[in-house]
Amino acid sequence: MVFSAAGIVNGSMTNNLVQLSNANTAVETNWERSAGTRVCLVALYPERDQAMPQQLSNHGMRMIQASLLAAEIRSLELLALDLHYADVETTAAAIIDFGADIVGFSTFIWSFEFSLAVATLVRQRKPDCLIVFGGPSARPSMFELRRYRECSSLVDVLVINEGEETFVEIVSSPKRDRDSLIKLKGVSLCRGGQWTSHTPRPLGDLNLLPSPYEMGLVPEGGLAMLQTYRGCPFTCSFCEWGVLESPKRVRTTENLVREFEAMNSLAKTGALIVDAGLNLNENAFRHLKSAVEVSGFFENRQLICEVYPARLKQNHFDFLEGIGSPYVGMGLQSFDNDVLAHVERSYDESRFEDNLKRLTENNSVALEIILGLPGDSPEQFRRSFERARRYPCALRVYHCVVLPSALMVRAPSEYNMKFDERTLKMISCLGWTADSIIREAEYVTLRANSEGGQVGEYFWVFPPPVTR
Image (cartoon, rainbow, N blue to C red; front, side, top):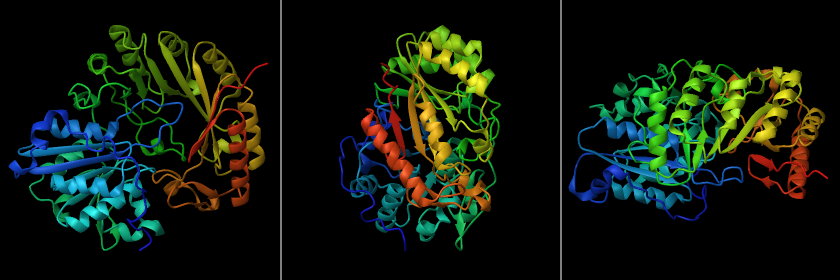
């Protein structure tokens, strides 16, 4: 077995390990008194970076939590572990002590092995517990990697894409055997070492989903997570947004006003928009703009968002001018359209220059590029990097990762990709040797250290260049 539970996550801080659902505190703190269905939800957030040092709650897990509570499932007992610092043994012990019948893990590249390690211990100590993986890394393609191939039997169900309705159906199901669960939409199960192809679940109506903010499930303070639509009109192959259908259902003005009122009551310092982009859905943006005007939520608060440079219009600039503290990310990935063509992306030179100039006049802006994109080269990447450092804004450089719904399943064979199966970071590919990626990463690290930046496992953050 390539994967081992031992030693995946070293013992670290366990402060705030168990955070009980506010609505279920009475039940959860008296675990011995009921024999109902006990569900534990587990999410681990990554290390904070200087762009977003504020407290964040795992939005996906909180949406599942809200959906389960709103469904009023008979005899449900619910424990939510919204983790920032945790170790495997302590987390598993909390789940076992709770007596969970079902454990749902929210999995990302930074939490996938942690989740597997915890699930391994839970399976050993409570073999009849149903183990469910959801989130971006809950994909058959992950378990088809050599490193995780023998872990397929550990996870009972993968929830693909949207999870709120699917998870409620799993918990509500009178039978939780494979023959019953495989009939649900949006799930994949493993049989004989082969994962079933799932029946997709269409994008749901966000206005019908219960809000964890309105239900008081999210801790007070810190940044809120705001979603106004799901999906993306683009199909960029390096991005997991690219496999979702184009967004059609958006949140109404009334729905968003209630969300802002709830965030205000929880003393949120602002919000991180988790949509594919602020300006990629005009209907969603129109409702957001109206809700912000009605609520006044962002007058003295921070807003963090992404924009697609070629689609910026006057109404987007006007909107950002009314924000107390806006931080705008502009994902270019590269300044070379030949490079971008390999990942189904494009770039408009003249519109970029004009829009960046306007954005930087009144907003904190961060350009974003990727190191190690297939079809790029060290020379072209270096040109993109040096050009980006000349603009009066921050820069975020991301190490290309082979995401399980993106390049891992969508890249053509001629990309000749090799990547680290733990971190999913690109090792070599079309245009890049392993040595050249290492050299460029070392160069960017050197520059970050000398220019007051930050070096993370997957990214480098640079402050705006010093002008003399």
